[in-house]
Amino acid sequence: MVASDWTMQRLADILNRSVNRPEVLETTALGAAWLAGMHSGIWPDERGFAATWKLDRCFEPTLDADTRLRLITGWRDAVRRTLS
Image (spheres, one colour):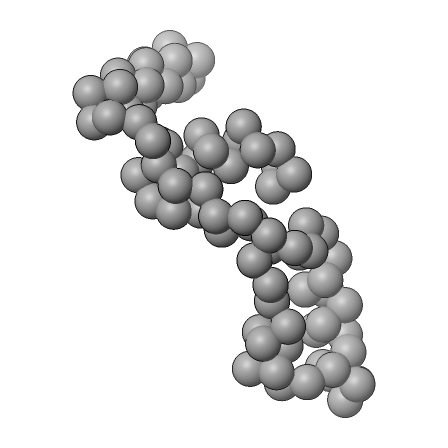
């Protein structure tokens, strides 16, 4: 998901928040490797591990409030119709 510029921009737009994409896209695998390494004493503590994080790109919201509300309302309606 994070490899998709469109998805990351859509998240920023809908959430109305900046969305940061890390250089390492496989964060689930990296997190699992870190947990295993931390418990075996090879990897650093949380702060040391967090210090290795690097930003690839920051996506800023671009939608106006009316468009955002219209999209969220449409999504909620689609979910409601799907669940009924």
